[in-house]
Length: 90
Image (cartoon, rainbow, N blue to C red; front, side, top):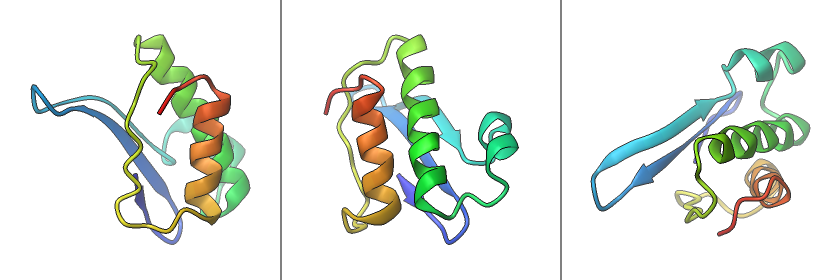
């Protein structure tokens, strides 16, 4: 997970093969159409729902959540809880 003041980005990486399996940002059309400004908790929660749904479509169900040193609060927490609600395990 990477966080800026206005956006979030996340990716699923296969560490054994050093390949990015899936990535998504809040610049995605589905997220951008609903939230013009993605720097709030509501947008992060919706982004998590979209990310979980698309990851499951690609067959990804288990992940390791790396918050990249960010505190587990606010947008990072909303994103993680939306991932869990969307059916991803970590």
